[in-house]
Image 1 (cartoon, one colour):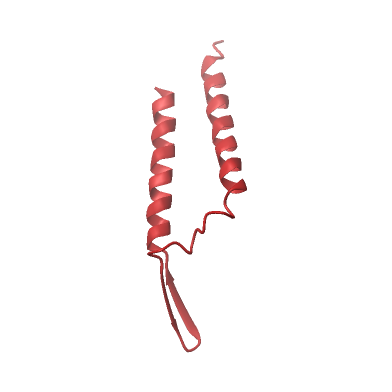
Image 2 (image 1 turned 30 degrees about the vertical axis):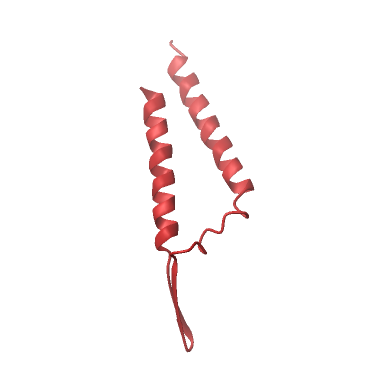
Length: 74
């Protein structure tokens, strides 16, 4: 039984968990949801919030992370 694929999978999962932990520890310094370009419309008794820049940033980060995982699995 070849254990190399299991080892690689565990290594990638460990790196993902470490990266997630690092991101969460610094998340209070990054103003997600309050970035320049996020729109907030307020009126009497209502608020509409459109997080455009936050969505773009999260999309880029997730694309890079998934690209890295795909590259490592080759």
